[in-house]
Length: 102
Image (cartoon, rainbow, N blue to C red):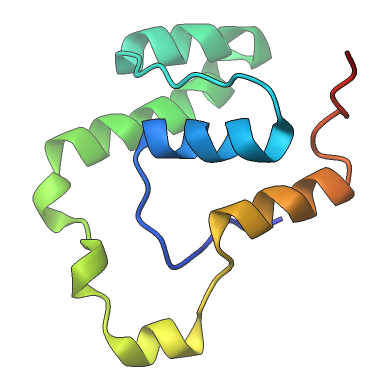
């Protein structure tokens, strides 16, 4: 399920929207890349290294990344994306998140 949308959200904003959609407390924690890579180690060193290398590259090359205000209106119209709250609702309907039971 692709994740692309019209919003530029911080990690904390994503957590807030997950909170509302899933009706449970979700917290965002920013990890050093090395800790993130280590947490993925159980799936294999090579698999864990891929996302970690991407984050390392982004950290060094932030000036090369597009900013939300740099996206031209024609692109927004051509690929409008799905607002994050709607994406979460769709993900729940498709079984990506287990139902919350109390």
